Amino acid sequence: MLLYELATKVLYLNGELSTLDLSNHLRLSLAVAQEIFWFLRREQLCEVTGMVGSIHRLTCSTKGRERALQLLEVNHYAGPAPVSLEDYTEQVRAQAITGKDVTPSDMTRAFAEMVLQPDVLPKLGAAIQSGRAIFLYGPTGTGKTSVAERLGEVFGEHQVWIPHAVEVDGDIVSVYDPVVHSAMETPPPSGTDRRWELCRRPKLVVGGELTMDMLDLGFNAATKFYSAPVQMKANNGVLIIDDFGRQRMRPTELLDRWVVPLDRRIDFLTLRSGKKIEVPFDVMVVFATNLNPAEVVEAAFLRRIQTKIKLDPVSREAFHEIFRRVCAKNQLEYQSSVVDSVIAALEEAGEPLRPCYPRDLVNQVCWAAKYESQTPRLDIPSLQRALSSYFLA
Image: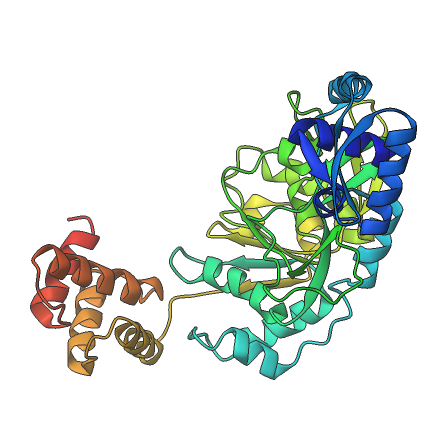
């Protein structure tokens, strides 16, 4: 019955469609669309306006328009046909992020553009292999966010199926989000269920804007259907909580909310009716913060996050290497002596060698050159000006 009701709304909102159009809109096979058409015709909910070959063209009848308006009072969802919660749960578990083998070569590939301390990559690799939550901490500018975002690239070659929507007791939960989910450019194999999109494993980043409301089903009073919470959109992938400890809610609220999901790999979401539904929680959560973890969360919760990796300022050699790579990316000539002068200036000012400085200072040089209609050059005068603009006097 859900498909017939959805088709009635789609037909009403689009004015006139062929059964092939209906098939594509609902992401169902043409045979199923034809079956829906014959049902709507028997119930006098549609009228045939013509044919193109063996394909009917149809529009809502008067009775169909009345029925569509009634259905739109229930909800305005008129997208691809939803899958059942049971099918969704089974698919998420089938493509779980846990149990996926991660090798040193996978890590080297994913982090090839980053310069990390020798002991960091093995720790990250072991953490990813576990599929459990990770705590990245350390001073600002040491690459925590960049490392967290790169974790998603480890699974770059893995593909997962994401449903457009899930149906739960007549309610619709929209899951697929083109902002979060990167659909594969190549078409899926013929005969696949088009209600699912073949995507790269999700990588979702949330920061200070995260609120408790974003961790539960979001009901839209206008459209009258739900949007999935961030952890459900990130299922089978990575969820990065950036700037942890600076959210609008207290850290303990977030951690209390996720004690069961992090341990048992299941989550409970609440419908408007008050009914709770169980959904998979197959997410590798990465907490990134420049605060002291011991001051942000209790020791009991820190024990649940078994991997804690501190990212510190880098050595002089690593700082030179980062500068060299940034120069190559910006088509600038790298000069070791010039970088030595930057290091000397930073040390004199009591500034640690943060990995973000080469990129930020080169950006300053390039912006100034573009403003003055000159070719950017990495020399001591340009970097001195960059340093004076970048740091407070």
